[in-house]
Length: 233
Image (tube, rainbow, N blue to C red):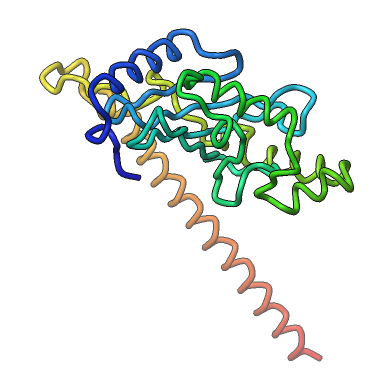
């Protein structure tokens, strides 16, 4: 999706930057904020699945996109982590009133994030984007819970959820090439060890070969003895 930085007036960009910075410094409980230095109009977040729901224990990546008419027009929200939920479409699009008719410019991004988290606790089957999830929620909650839990375990748990990495978890700066103590590659102690392993490997291979040859000789001798015995008969 294209950036809308150039389409937003400077005063709106300043307000967005201020709010995103405040969110990053003091995020809502259970929500992590990952601002983009390159595009302030796209905000990535990670929402922890609330306890007591089929999403508990999972971490769900989500993206808010601010359009060129923001804040007159609400942002658009998308789940990037696959989730079985009545108000989340198959492409991750989120249907919630605060992103539609209930939007007001003064509500702010914090309110949006909290509302989306609450949606994980209280789904609204009346405005379902995922009709199957909405139907199961109304008619067979046990099946709905089972399906939602299964997708949570597959896509949002165990480090496979694709939750955004913390900056410290990303690639580290390269070590200085001019400092021999920091050069990449095997250490001086590792080289002779590797050579030693190579020699041992060769010795082991030779030993295995001799053993195999000896076994073949024994088998051949047994066959010859058997033939001689048959001739005597």
